Length: 585
Image (cartoon, rainbow, N blue to C red):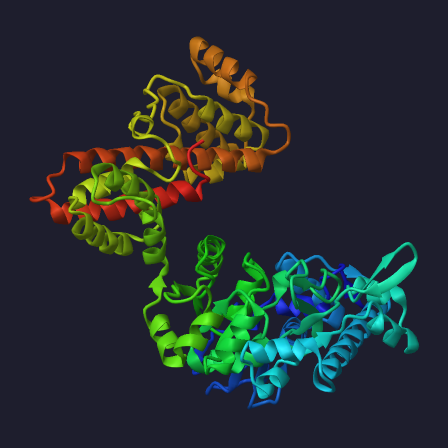
C-alpha cells in the first residue's frame, strides 16, 4: 500500500520527523559527538551500543545489528507492519496521509524525480557544451568552473520549446511536465517555462532533484522564477544546498542561512561552506526542523535591506520555537553576503559571523531604529518596545538585559522592571492591569461553585476529583454543600439532588436550586469540570500576580535589591502560569 497527500509522501513524512525525537521518547539517549547513544531496546545489553545519527536519520546497533530509519524503528519497537508504522508516525506528528491503495503514488513520484533529474542534465549540457549566455553571466559573477559543476548549474536557452521537444521525443506526458512546472500551456500550445535563464537545481537531502530556480539573464521579469509547488517539491520543507553542505554544517557546529542561490554559491566558493538558503524570505517551521537535524546553532545572514531585516526577525521566532540558538549577522559592506565575501574575503566574513548578534540583542537593536535615544521621548518609545521583548525572557536573562539597558540608557533598573510589569503579556494598560481581582466574599455562592455542583449531581464520581481541588469552594453555603456531598458519596457511593436539599435550610435550598437552574452541563461533564478548575487556578494566579506587583511597587531599589530580584523572578513565573491557562479572559 502506498501513501500520499498531494505533497505528504513517505519521504516528506520522514523529512518532517526527527528520528532522535522519536527514539528518545522510549530510549534514553546521550549525545556522543555528532550522534546519540543508548542501550539497545532490541536485545539485552549493559554497555550502550545503540547509536542514532541525527544527520543521517538512521539508527544502528553494533551489538545485534538492528539498523534502519525512523519507520523501521517504529515497526520493530511497536511490532507493526510498514503501513501501521507510517500511520502511527503521521498521526503523532499531525501529518495527513492518504492511501493510494497500491503503491502507484510512489511510482508516480519516482517518475517525477526522474523527469526532474533528466531536466537538470538537459540544462547542464546546455550550460557546459557550447557558448551560451548563462555561462557568460556566471563567469562575470566570478564563479569558478569547479563550483558551477558542484552545484549542477545549468542554462535554459532562449528557444520557446527546446526542453518540451526533448521530453516529447522521450515520450514524457505533457501533464507530468506541466505539474512539475517545466512547461506551460496556452491555447493548446506548449512552451518551456524557463527561457534564457541560469538554472539552479534544487536537490533535497536525499539527493533527489525536486525543483529548479531560474535567474533571468538581462531585464526579463520576474528576476527569479521557481518551480511551482507539486507532489515532490514544497519550498517549506527544504533548504537549498543542504544536500551539499550538511556535512560542513555538522563539522562547524552551526549553519549560516542566507536568502539566495548566489549567496550560497559565492560563500561556498569563498571557503564558507556550512551554508544554505531558505528558498524565500519566509522561513518555515519545517525548514527549522530540517536544520535541527544537523545543528542546534544557526546564523541568519539575510540582505541588509528592509525586507531582509524583517525576514531575519521572523526567522528568529521560527528557529527559536525549535530551541535553536540563533544569531543575526549584519553585513556592513555591501548589500548581501554574495557581494561582501567577493570584496572582503573569507576571514572578513567569518569576523562578521563572530560578531553576529544573539536573538535578544538583535531584537533590541531593531527596536532602536528611527529613535533618538538622546531625547526623553526617544528613550520612552524605545523602552515601550524593549519591555515587550524582555517580558518574554527567563528571570535570569531578563535580569542581565535590564542591567544592560539601565547602563546604556541611564535609567534606573527599578523603572525598567516596572515598565516591563506595566506592559504585561496580555498587552493591557497599567491602569487596567492594576484593577484588583474581584474577590468572592464568604457569603457569596458563585456561579463557578454552582457549575461544579451541577457536574457532581450529574456524575457523583467527580467528587473524587473535587477532593484534589476542594479549596475551589469558598462560600459558606458552598462549603456546607461540599461537605454534604462528600459525606453522602463516602457512605453511599453517590447522591441525588433530594439528598442535598433535605440537609439544607429552606433559604439555603432555595438559593441552591436557583443557582442550579442557570447552569446547563449538557453531557460534557468532564470538560466542564476541567474548565472550572482551570478558571479557578487562573484567578488564583492573577490574584497572586497583583500581590507581587503591589509589593514591587513599594520596594526600595537601593535597600531591597535582592527582594526585587526574587519578586521579579516569582512574577515572571506566575505570568507564564497565567499564559499557560490561555491568559486572562
